[in-house]
Length: 387
Image 1 (cartoon, rainbow, N blue to C red):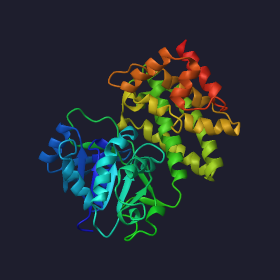
Image 2: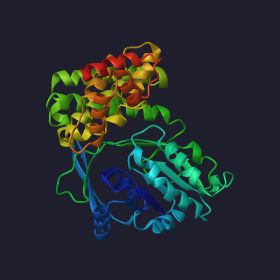
Image 3: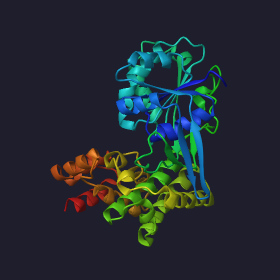
């Protein structure tokens, strides 16, 4: 697989520790792209870094090399040239940043002359993130719609791997959970020359929705529920939070609600989902994955949005007439995650709750329509938090 090249936007811990590790092991040269001057300088000056996988049975370390780094803020032309000759573009920048990386990706696609299309895969904690990215890229392209399939293929993905809080002196080294799941939809590649990109460990699937929703409504719901309850009850870490029997049960109750939805909607058996839930609870309770509640809870506006880990499953349960009271408890705790240090979204949340009515805040925060069966239930929680 010599000669393969991947461009990865986002040189943070997920980029270096999850996506970068996968691509490196699959034989790709990885070009990290970021706008953080210090991070890019570190990557340019350091020929390798270490990824340490943490599991209940111990740790395993891997050396990551064969990478370069480019600052897209100062060297956009270099990024365009790299994309023009790359095999894969991935990103882990956060859903709100996708619109900012789209223009340079579009320029790179327009500049391509390779006889195989570029594979673009967004690795974000959001449903349909690659579709979102493509929606920003396509209007910026000069390539015609008819020529686009020969130049690029966009594929959504679902990622599941916990990246805990890192040591202060870690540098570029990354600690990461040993467990992983990375699923990518295969349909966009079925008629593409060369097929799907060869990335060892990626599970290419026909229908991604069950994997995305199972992960988002189990892993992310559990993690966020623990973080927000832990924060509001004075806990420092997720491990400490999950060791509290009361909060442990609250998390389990929320996952019972999401499990009922997943089983009904996707045909996953109750026993299979129960095993998955138990594995998730064990994973986030692992003391070796010690993580502070403020880090896990950060960005509450995104986590309270329409398709995310609370409102996403709760809205579907409400439409079915099923119970979602435990998820609504998580919503209340998330609403109380205000003015947290170094979290601009928590400050904005406090401002919204202070300056708007309960109904206006519910609409703004969740995107729920006033006629939706969940709307008034969320309004009650918002009003309660507003006092």
